Image 1 (cartoon, rainbow, N blue to C red):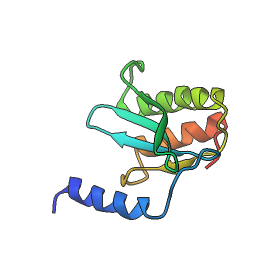
Image 2: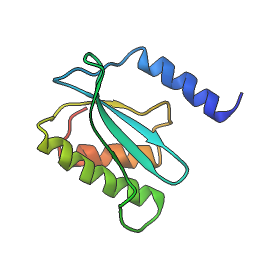
Image 3: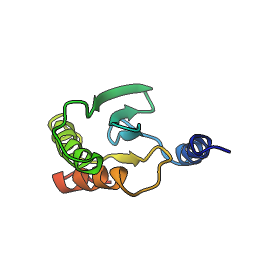
Image 4: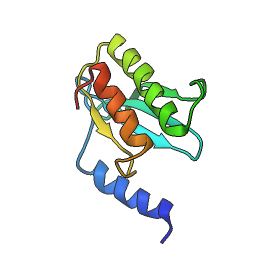
Length: 112
């Protein structure tokens, strides 16, 4: 079994337990080899409320870019009126870029 397949199995197991609502949407994270992207999703209405990629984030290594992307993403989420979210790590292990992204969200004031 490949790493990608293992991640999809972990993500399926995780998604069986969590779901986003209008009041508390799910923040889904996707990590490619170079970039990271996130979406705010209302699973009840089956709608993506907001999404963004880190393509225009400044210089630094991938972890530093994920940190600055998390800060800017959190500011935009808070501006839209969402304070509490459900964090969906997408089946990725909670370390590296995913961890720094999540810590940046918490530092800016999001609750999950």
